[in-house]
Length: 100
Image (cartoon, rainbow, N blue to C red):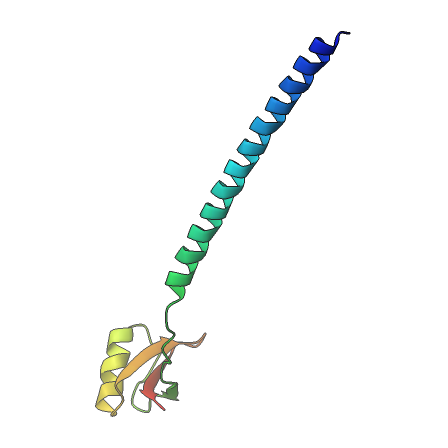
């Protein structure tokens, strides 16, 4: 093998190595940009957390029978002085709700 052949092989290997390093640098930049964008999207969705008032639940005193209509339960609970009511549980009880 002649020295010019070795020189051209080394030059070809060097240029191939340079191109692959450039591609790796480009892919590293791309992956970093995607990761940064993902973190920004996740962080904006987190936002400030607002505390919700605890709700106290009491079984309705005036509701009779199984609770099949949440609207009816809410109306009965409002007559009892509660702001809201829901049908809950396996036995379908009318439960009145109010902030604690």
